[in-house]
Image (cartoon, rainbow, N blue to C red; front, side, top):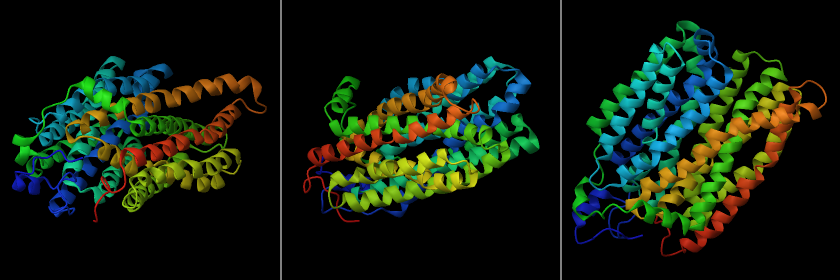
Length: 451
């Protein structure tokens, strides 16, 4: 998609975007690499501050005398609601040519870090809800804005890897949130844990503001005007590839989120593990597998995508297919050690979608819509996955309890085994997305150039 006015060659060189003409620079430059790695740190903090409340939920409920529904609201649906409420407006702001995205990300990091630290002062449920609203509303600026910046900084041939580097923050943040949050709580209490987790973000916000330059500043005079939201939604509606990727990812996140929450409960109730043992084993294996899968998925997407744009999404499709047997038998077995081993590969496969999916999304979009479409994409995937996943699994478990033999907790096992088979649904969506990508990005005209 050639959207730049090439009568300004100097500006194009500064941008170094995949929208440049073939004769212009297209390497993944050191300055761009620095920005991508710093964005990775930002995303890691984003996920840590989002996830840490899950491990702190029990001591919080004891001190503030919270009911289970209040904990569920804090950790799931309420967060997803306010995250999505602000995601599209902030994505629109990031797409505005006059917006300095460096200031936007720095400000967002400062706000969510302050809000996380403020959770340490909560004296009741209402105070905690207000602080978590601050976390959710500001965190929604991170991914759409970062994807938009990466698309401006990194050539097509390296974009899957660059987005995978950024995406490594998700499994690493989840690992730090589970393991670090648990250790901090054990030694210092939940209030100190919130404070110690939140404060580092203020330092990173300042470093980002001082050391990163807005990649489109040099070409702001040739940038296209901000597109109306209704026109952006029309672009999404007219692209089968975007729609298939969106709903495939949403359903995958639905299964992953439900499996993560109720999988932990399965190990506690059906395998008899302690919270500490289950947390360490599931956190470490999930973190290592997630980091491996995110990087491998981005690397494979770039390698395959250079041959044919339709192949960008193939790693995600095969990852979903291969997850089915490993997940099914991991939940079926009564040996928790075997279950942990079997879960390693699905944990890796769950994260292989990131690089190829979001690289494909950026290839399909005009530069002036990237952050907004990413925000819309996350709106659907977050609300369905994060908002409904664990909640729906819990309802299904309650419904099945009267019909399963053995202990009532065995209903969780049956829900998890059934969910394993449903991984075929996102696999089909990614397969259809691959076919649509081949049509919407014909080989030759939009094919990524050499690295």
